[in-house]
Length: 557
Ligand code: AMP
Image 1 (cartoon, rainbow, N blue to C red):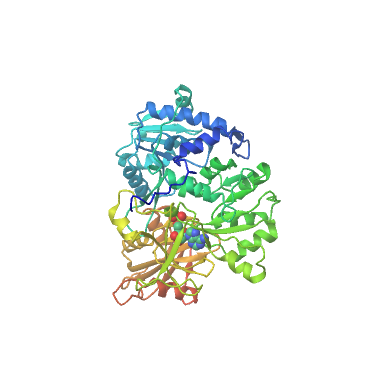
Image 2 (image 1 turned 120 degrees about the horizontal axis):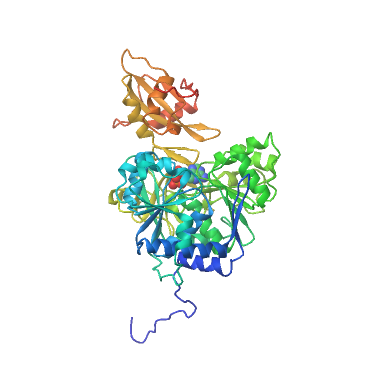
């Protein structure tokens, strides 16, 4: 540039860091009177955002007294609750990283993620101590437990950790009077997602990505969270930060309603009615349960503006049932832990009606603002957005992961020239509406959480009667998907589904154990000898597989 050409710099911007600390400031000022409700059928708790912010000041002080420094991870093992929100704002505001541990993971996965995150301190709800006791021996970095809520005290397995009561720690703490300045590109929150094979992978959200995501969640074309809303995140705070709703609420001043561990339809509908909830977000299984419940009980969800639903494909029957039985609207959305998770939301312009409206509502949604998407076919070529051509969906943007936390191999596998490979096969139409048509990743999503088909296959193979086993997702009305075990018997061997279930129950999480089995002569293979699960899925869809359903309780061996 020649000296004669002045650089024109805008005069409008003030380079304020986009930090979780700025959300905390808003909670104690503009949004001070918004509230956080812990709804329970027998009684509710209530606090204003100002009170939450003041308790966060104390939590920050307590954590600092335990030696938490910038960049340290502080873990949580907790339900959706006020204390968890306090951790959500206090830990990142210290410059530390909130590491939410997914309590649905298997003991091996949980051990891995706690060790990999390497937190010294875990904030844990007492009701979840049995999960922690089961993995205690393998925990390498943990030193302190901060115990929240009612429930039994820790058993002997946890005796080597220093134990603190959450409320006592807050009462004794010197509140933080001036929170530190934090680099907005530094890590704020860490969340692990389980993959097809290997260990879970950590997604590290930055302050900036979290704040931009919260702003995006306030857009009318996405989750439309506003100051007048009362938001019930049923989606857990340990899974993709409850879809970013706590931070969005902190930013705009929407009140938050939590139901803790009780995700029964009675409690959810009770919370919606009593607290006049306007936005309630959950996976399809939650809403299927509510719909079934509403057939036999009086349910009043008239306060709902809409219910965002995603994490798995939403069947048309659910949309229709919601509209007809409950008079409420479901809005379909697509996202991943790696996308913070806002990726696409199926908002339909008012002037689109009839079947076209249905077609758009059933799509996974219109690619969200600031998110870029492309479709890549098997030859690595980009395919057009014509609503017909399909390819693997790849995305990038300010709140899309550019790699995995301390995992070079997983990062290299997932990132293609700066774009995140989602493992979802999709079409996109000319207006940017996304439709998932298949899944390249070999994994099963049941009730919103992942089951590893590869791991189930390995465990089935360990049974002496099994020569080969392939596990594929079978569509399921309540859970969206359940595992179907396709088993090839060893020559001359015999085994029943019930026996295989008993065998598996001791080796994998109970909710992973399939209830669907089919015995086949051989597993179809691709030209390079890999299991061809597309063929199995097609046979299942065409009714060509003889499927045995075994739902009886698992006999203890
Ligand atoms: P997770 O990281 O556990 O939230 O899982 C993300 C994955 O869930 C996506 O890559 C999809 O495979 C699946 N998923 C999320 N939303 C939808 C949706 N609306 N329809 C179908 N599958 C979905």
